[in-house]
Length: 247
Image: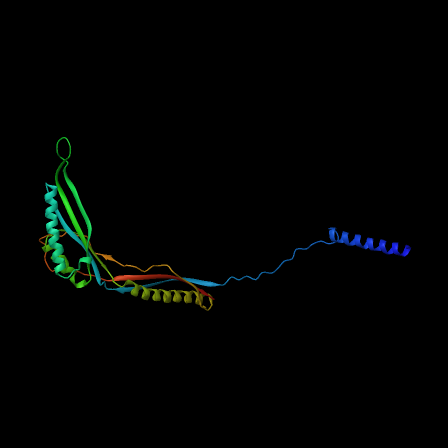
């Protein structure tokens, strides 16, 4: 029995020491563990490239119409409609389809005499009707203008030249832009003594779409000479990209 009490006493002492060991701050102090984290950052060179393709326009948009004036608004409208009908009929006769003739503006507004005694006075009315004409044969632009003038057109807001298949040329410009960016990046890499790897990213900064150049606005006159000369010039189809290369 005495031996049993001695064993139990020893066991309790050990248990107490273990409890103190796990709870006493002075016996077991936790030290922070520092883990080395390897950086995943990749060295890159980023360049902006630009590509330009020059193209001769193959489609034109002409806005022209008829302006009439009269003391009576109804008379001004009737006269305008008769002249405009002749213009449109003549355009269709020369091969312009109905879908390519679209009304762009129709307005009726009064004319005032601001020098009248007492108050301003309406002395007449102006009616203006214009259409936007799509000319798919670029060589007919001068003929369309001349035909319109012959039939009574006396006002125009200008000519726009464009390309019917812009996307085709834009993709060519994109290829040029990527090559241009590569050349710039290689020059920078050579300057710092590194060799470029594959591109890590390519960002298209431009967007495709219609490219248009505008002719000067001009008011047509009935006495204008026929066989109007038209110069289409060239359009610049431009693309811009940003490319990053690893090294």
